[in-house]
Length: 402
Image (cartoon, rainbow, N blue to C red; front, side, top):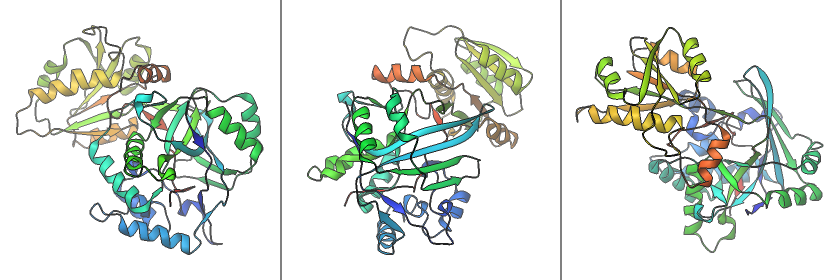
């Protein structure tokens, strides 16, 4: 089905006074300006490369990467290895651990049906990531993929692997990174994962960028792969959260907004966010939460889907078609509505309290089974439909292609 191989990775080599937390970072697309400044204050942090653009040019980032290798800050494993990456965290009142296998995944067109996307992408983001790839000839960050399940025998082989790095981030997530060198385990993993299809959970932009880069370099075998972290769908630590929408720049009264979105919905005013959350969890249909600038909260119950399109049970699709698009079509040309995305409900509530936003749309998390079903039928969910928590961090291993 797919080709997922071990590789000679570049691994951080720490000085006595260094901590691995000074070298690693969240993926580039979730780092704000304040966090970026903090991460880049560490001279050898991976964010100095992944966010090291000078007006879209990553030549300096490439020179910095070469310097780290020359100085011995990054060292090769010298043999082909897989890598075990585990994240332990609290979610829904439980302590969970998610287990991923890192390796290099052969790139191929979605048309072949082995690599399945589930979301649309933003073209400008892909252009930036392509500039980074061209400059560094290295995959500095991993995509995140899912496969159906890991067999028991392979799981048992992974239990004895000793961690190389352990690190707890500011959100309380414990990251554990290990190198898998034993040939028996490597052979078992390669055999097990060769029979799988891969659903891209996170990293669509990076995958599509890597595929374009490989097409630009057809004679270079190493550039036909992308760094990937694969997790079993039945992993007990696999958590999917929704990505809520915050809208600003609408410039229309709340009454006009409600009039623009009532079609197909039952509408109820809620007394609190707790009441809204309870109603959304109990609903057997798609129910959207709405927070207005004045603090009023509504539940929009999608009672009458217009047809039997399999996309209608998807919260983000209903949001796009029956909330976002009707608002956009009702706005004067001069109104420039902006949409921001946030997976943290507490953060959304705080932002709405600032008065900066006109409204927020609260969504429910999509079901993994639904994501797989749509992906297998070649249907893509709207951009930012899912948020797999926690994010796969960068910097533990780099896949060099030169």
